[in-house]
Amino acid sequence: MEASLTRIPHSRYSITPPSVIRRRRSEGLVTQIKPVYKLTCKHCHTILSARSMKDILLSNAQIELFSTDTPSESLQILDKDYVTASCYCRIRDVACLKCGCVIGYHVVSPCIQCLESCNNGHFWMFHSNACESSERRVNSKVVTWHHLQRPHLDIEFLRGNQLAYEQLCR
Image (cartoon, rainbow, N blue to C red; front, side):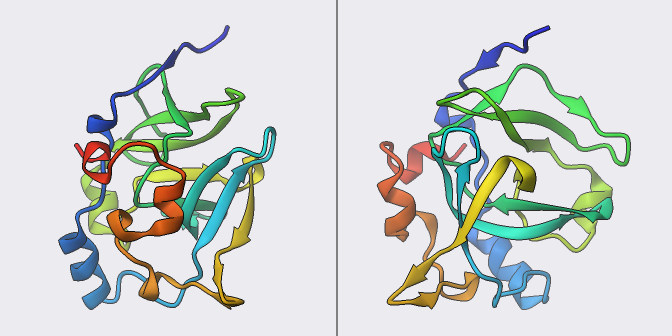
């Protein structure tokens, strides 16, 4: 059975507010020295994210993935919400807009347990086996989250988006 693809209006994308990220950083919940990764689809090499972080799944530390605070236009949300077996977060699978392969998921509504856990505020997750990653560099130096501009000022992120940052927010 083939899942139907639903293009979500960009105004419905969730962006982690800067105030939440600043609060989590001040509480030590976000590692500021983590490198920023650029992700491409392993199947068609489309750029999926220019601002991703290497992470582990909150409910299972054995599972590595990538996450981002801001989605790109090359993502498409699939059909319906579902709940995981390990928590009560409502999530939707996310596919590459170009080739249609499922490359991750979007946390539509995080559960209380996950919100209260140590998390980075990212609600867009990418399966590490569906993406190719490379560290972002400026003048041969690795870009870290501490030095990363907000999405509306991040030139590398903006190059991949045709819509204004404000239109990506819900």
